Length: 135
Image (cartoon, rainbow, N blue to C red):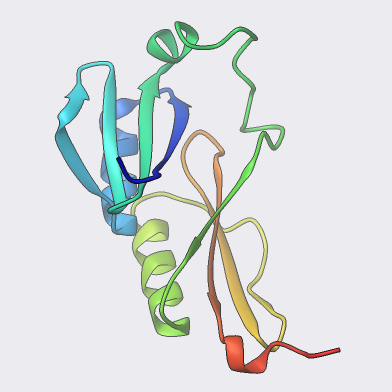
């Protein structure tokens, strides 16, 4: 089996969250989805599991973080260019997400940040490897 990444997120409104992630460009895999969780696919190897708080709690050994008021993690997704960053952010903002900070331009990398309804933070970035400083 290939190595894959599954990110599990506790969400308050499963359908609203699924719609938001669909707007960002994720697709739903119904084979691993039910009324308590939705498997959202970014690529062949990257998946986000949107889980109700009740379902998430069955896996957790600690209380669920209040990600609306504190950062529990930063999740980053690479894309093929600045136009794709802007398209994803526009779609996410139109679907109800928020952009907590302005775009960052590091010369070799451009990045925009979006938060979902539960405050989970996503950094969408493009990195031009030919512009990475040497030395």
